[in-house]
Image (tube, rainbow, N blue to C red; front, top):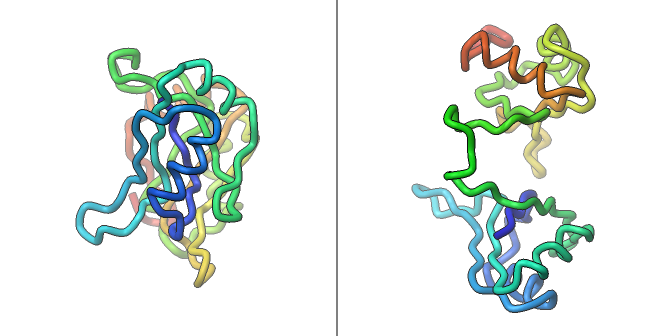
Length: 159
């Protein structure tokens, strides 16, 4: 089973399944949608009959409906650490106020460790902040330090 992120909102379940079926037999595939609005959430999952097919898919870059997507192996819930978080270098930051800049995001989190990449996700049509982003550090220890202080942090006056 693979996670597929960055899926275009125009991509249909049929297009999604057809794209991955060229690699091998697809047992299951789904594009996740918002429970209330029914709109796509920009990611999905694909499960192949043969694990070797999934390995091959992970070795390539993928573009669906003209948009590059990120494909990663899923981590089964039972394999996750007791805390529910595996050691990682990348964090999700939600609840970002619209006024916060990418530089301010980087500055805030740089006290925890050296930052390799940072971004605030923008709405494709309006160019405005979608209120969340990601920060990638050069070591898992930086992420450990962030969570050791609790799960909420205040950025731009917002938790």
